[in-house]
Length: 145
Image 1 (tube, one colour):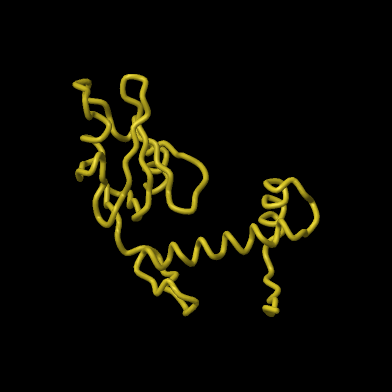
Image 2: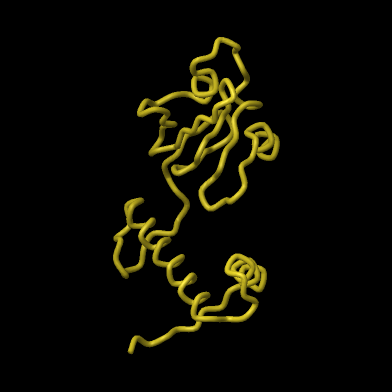
């Protein structure tokens, strides 16, 4: 039998998990969800250059990412824009925004296939690593000013 280690989590995190699972009490299903989340996080750290094993991994902020004027987009950031009614997605990989396998600037991404000269700040939605909410680039720009 594998030994069990209790880990404290904030009540709001517990309640969010309970709401997601549909159970307000600690259960085997909740324990499995927590174990899966932790193992997924550990594996992601390995994919970002960590050891990928049970050994301690680097939890420091990502060193790579795309610097867009005063806004830093860490590696793993997802970008979304709508062109002609169709959602298009790009991702920050290393120090570049990658769209259809090609490095692009935010402006080139939001204007791909378009001649409208749209502002990337007002046309680009961002999902930062660890976030569950898409945010308009302009609102993040204002928050960092």
